[in-house]
Image (cartoon, rainbow, N blue to C red; front, side, top):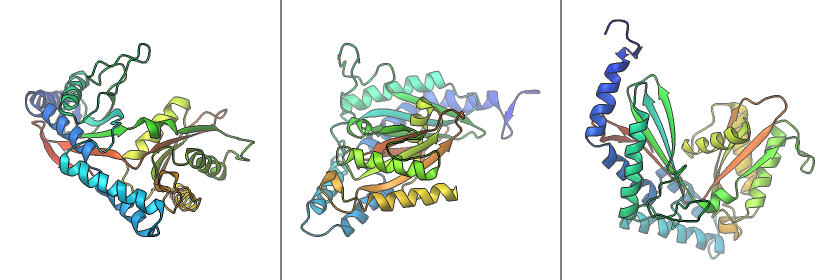
Length: 316
């Protein structure tokens, strides 16, 4: 169409017609149900490798070794039986990278239907309650559930990532405002290091460790926490492209694993499996460090969708 806006050479109206109209008529809901099943029951390969590394370094006969062995058996059993890794299937967080023109309202409607179906199938536990009345209607639907994050990009490809974040690990997240005089933490990376390690110390074994940290330096109180959770979408064994943050990630991982907290707080060398840190601009008056904590049951998967809504590839 003359004069129409184009994305990577494809008119937006064509993207809309070909990408979503066909997608909704065919396999989108089924694909999202399978994504939920896989995320709930099958731990990602990068996390599995981290747990195996932890098993290798813990001493025989210790409680730490036994805890990781139980975790490993849990992982195998959940995958074999296609049942949730943890009884708390957590907050449901969708991250959708989509082309311009995708109907986000209808996509979310399909995602909500997929959540209801997955709950009936047992892939999700009935654990979303009304915060005022305490009522649980058994669907996992309600304000903020599922939580949808859409990001448009200059491509006709649709990628959907899902994170199921349990309440135990969410409870031990922390946010600090620098400077922090009690910790002698100034507004610099050394100050960030001090407060991040303080968050690990405060968590002890309460977050179902060994854990993974997602951190945002900067932003405001709301965006900092949201940004910190996006860090969990990275591969556990990747390297930060920012040399300073890469060094900080590796330093905190090494130092945390020398604290002796260990799996479930039982002592040992495996307190954290990974540390992922990003930075967001801030206003001069504020310097927040937001720390999200993920338990060992790191339920995060993603898929690329074909034009008919079927899964064309897995992202993890």
